[in-house]
Image (tube, rainbow, N blue to C red; front, side, top):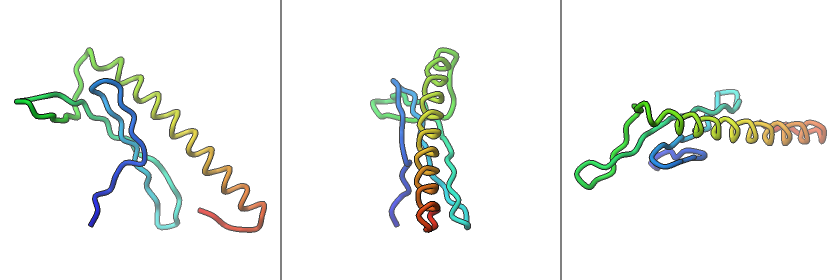
Length: 92
């Protein structure tokens, strides 16, 4: 089984937001976000869900960019739904 991948990722420096698309049983779509901070330990890259004080401005920017991406994606999805409804079809 293939591992699920994020729908979209936004990264600035060592801070990354992964945006995940989810569907309900009724095929309604919504998005969730996970945040990670990357760091090197022993020459290997690791990730952490915790952030230091100096990470917070970048976290804020990444979240803002992710929010904008989600809003644009939802607007595009709604436009397709509206076009389909006007043409007599149903899309979810």
